[in-house]
Image (cartoon, rainbow, N blue to C red; front, side, top):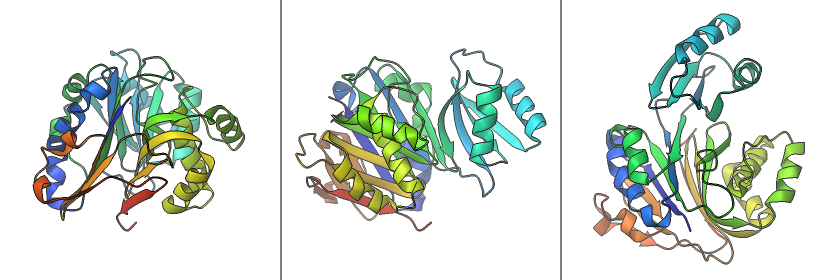
Length: 300
């Protein structure tokens, strides 16, 4: 049993309050996932030709300034960075593959949590309230955000095994349920060049969507294929640079509720997580249908 929450803002005037609005949603899912929690927030974009990375190192005293200086010097690029607790965001004037290759060669002990132009992923072992406070969630700004509280069933309680999982540019996924064919899919996806950091089945679902998108699929087409190729029980919420999506398997045994107003679209495993949102009493509220996905996206 895990908890999922998501908030997509249709009204840009609310972007300065997204952390404030989202924090009680995440904490409301504590009983569904007390082991670990995390969230992916979208905003503070970098421009074309730049890449944004969320990085983590097991040593809380790791010298990020030294890493930044070395990367600047060796790749001859512009770079700015900021630290949030034990996670750091690098903004680098270079492309994704160049930076990934350099990191693998020169900083292999640094874990890359996300790569893109907009996304930042922050996650940790512990209660959701603790994680929200650690990363100062309530003061964050952005356009959309998805989160997860975990009760581990498929793998150990570790930061690496917590959600969200990101396997491609600005893409991430949170999952309540379990996949029965993840081992076979993982091997197939590895042959297609998708890399994995854990044995978690949810990371395979994220990798599958990354692979479909790299083949040229739109998000909607990728989700259509996912309904055919992913076996098991699942409610997914997926984040992209331009929006988010919610999808349920054909049995739909994992709970989910959606709410929409003129200002936002919100998703949660239970309605209680939505009750603090402004205007929720007038929202359109419904349960997502089985074998169905819902997508909200801005124009690219």
